[in-house]
Amino acid sequence: MPGFTFQSTKSLLMEPGASARIGELVKALGCRSVLLVTDPGVMKAGLLQAGLKGLGQAGVAVTVFSEVEADPPVHVIARAVAMARAAKADGVVAIGGGSSMDVAKLVALLAHGDEKLADIYGVGMVKGKRPPLVLAPTTAGTGSEVTPISIVTTGENEKKGVVSPVLLPDWAVLDAELTLGLPAHVTAATGIDAMVHAIEAYTSKRLKNPMSDALAREALRLLGGNIRIVCRDGANIEARHNMLFGSMLAGMAFANAPVAAVHALAYPVGARFHVAHGLSNSLVLPQVLQFNAPAAEGHYAEIADILMPGKGNDAASLVEWLAELPVALGLPTRLRDVGIRETDLDALAEDAMKQTRLLINNPREMTQAAALGIYRAAL
Image 1 (cartoon, rainbow, N blue to C red):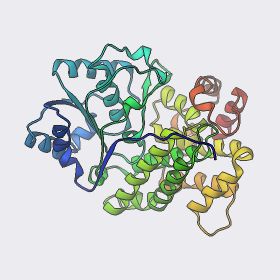
Image 2: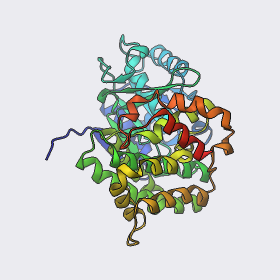
Image 3: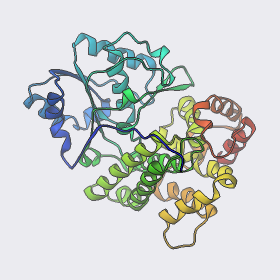
Image 4: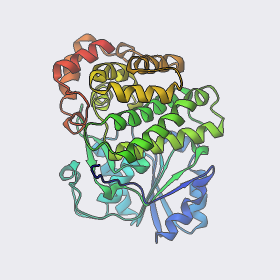
């Protein structure tokens, strides 16, 4: 059997109310002052309260950066780095969604060293070290708390990734109570995003490994079995816990067996039309799986058995199930539903082909003509 490597976050704390313990965790890491990274919505919802209280009780000074935007652009990261330096923060905490966690990772790296963001895009370009970093997700979607990846919007319509194990935090704090207030449409979109992570990890052409496979299977069992429940009953703490656990496992899986064409085609949708990342994935997911089916039929059948156990499933039934899921959850299902027109598709396909870091993992070779056909089918 061929060998493989697997990396993930050093320590995990998962229990309802765990965010109250962030203070004791960062104090044990030697921090006296931290930058807490979040976004305006999380702050307005009061989700920082337990974390701030715990930090205060631990005697750790806190400076809050709450200017994170979805798909964070370079200037947001620059402002956060400047604030961390001004506060002389010796640690970084994030309480928020994937964008907040991505910003926090880069702030921890850039605020205490000489590296420039423009020099570290890509895989393995980070040379420096970072101070303590603790990440607490408020959505069950990105799995960023256990991935060595940070995604940055670098121009008007382009995203780039920084990929390095240095970005893995010291602690991932998973508190299902932080997800209780999520609206159903956000719960749905982020949940589908997590499912895409598991599906693409399981079928990745490059770096696929038995550890990621096992995590992806369990992630899909948890996510598929709970996503309808949490969208129907957002106060169900057990289902919220299961979704958060599934998202984390999917994050571990795709951090080591990377995602592919679904993400590559979703990124331009998000960048050009400011569509949330999870919804962007959902809008192209069935069409990309249909395209990939000739090269991934066996794996898709296995995934179908996890999501629909005991029904004699195949790749076609998986595509059908995933096409029906956003309908059942009340999400938009066509690109035209988010303002995309036929005349936009050529530019989307051109942008998608720039995502070479992702496309090399796809089980079937993706061409610009194929990408254009997928966008047309999804319109």
